[in-house]
Length: 396
Length: 137
Image 1 (spheres, rainbow over the protein chains, first blue to last red):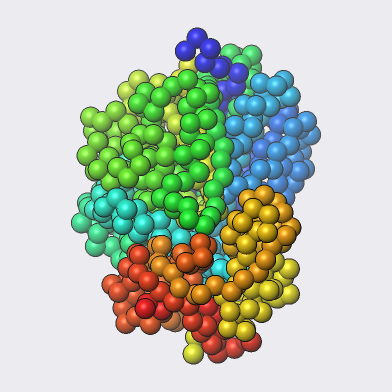
Image 2 (image 1 turned 135 degrees about the vertical axis):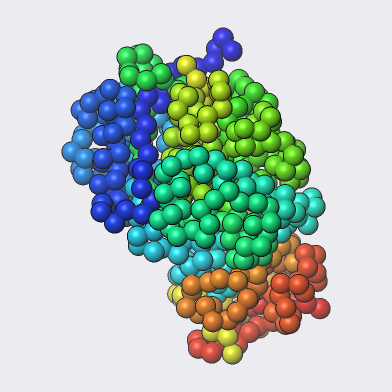
């Protein structure tokens, strides 16, 4: 561990508390979240010299548009947009840019009004034609959920994975959500049927949206936002809270290829890069914040990150104890996840926020003494074109 | 008749594929330089970057690699269809295509991974282009 890097750290965090919020715009969410995260760190508006942005904010115009809106003149702008994992890519790029001496205080932010605007993210059908890919896919009416469901079906075919096994992910995540007042409010505001703990039977008896995925295996569609401040080591030594160090990152892409294995995601490429840089192994990780768009996303990514072998996520999630108050080593998605806390469309920033809370000791489902966390985002379509972004975080 | 969305043409990469469909052919490409099978259609080889590709007609037979059945869709062309399938089909020539499996009474129980299927060109309510779908054989 002697050479484990300590170049950049998460020093300020803020998560927008409401998941249905008609009172603000997505850009207002971003700006107010940035101010609150800077306050959390004890840093000033004018300290920001780097902006990372995924082009969210309901037409926010990327890093340039955000800089103008905020009234800042950063010397690093990065508008990487790779779906829900954009924020893991941003954290990786902020680490790189800070280590290179190009920036000292980097800002990541997110704002989306998908619930208020009633965006049918999972069931709206494919994008229109007129492009090289759209013209080959739009005639078939495949939905986002069906794309992930095709991965689940093949995983079940190849490895004997069952819906009952995958349902353990929904159950543990809801267990965490019920301890998080903001998640409880989210489920209430979004009129969930039964804002309470759920059972395997509840998941199995919820309606099928796209075979084999049930309603309770799918993330919600919410409003939401937040911000993360990442600072250089010299800045991090003087911030209000304990820094959460970024010690490794990995980025990868995957897409449909002739003869390829759909049950393996880009995470199989990004994770070894991140763990290698961090000089830690998956068995040392306390907290896994894995993008839970659907249960199958978590299952595939747990395998690809090395927490279990390929094909063994079913037994792993159903027997190892993934809830914070179960004896297993690895604890999963302690904020309540996209399944039960928030999913405004691209939830990658929340994976960083909750990992940071855990490593500061501030989670509503706190794992005592949590030292190491991984935030892994899967952006795009798990069964099609997607990215994997892996970030390894360490407590101070 | 179904009313699937039509391809939006002209579009440089996919125009020849859809002209093939109109002519009753399921077209794919191979690279003259490295023999890679290229699909979906492009003007370059995805393995070596060569611009020398040959367009060929597939036999139209293959197997279901994976599938799902869409029970909920807000897309206006599919919203009233009831449960319908989407699938990745592996064609015998070595390319994988997104399509739909038709000709089964209950897609939720009758479609199986590995099932042999054959292409058919499904006429649509509106538009000049039939849509290639697959039926169990």
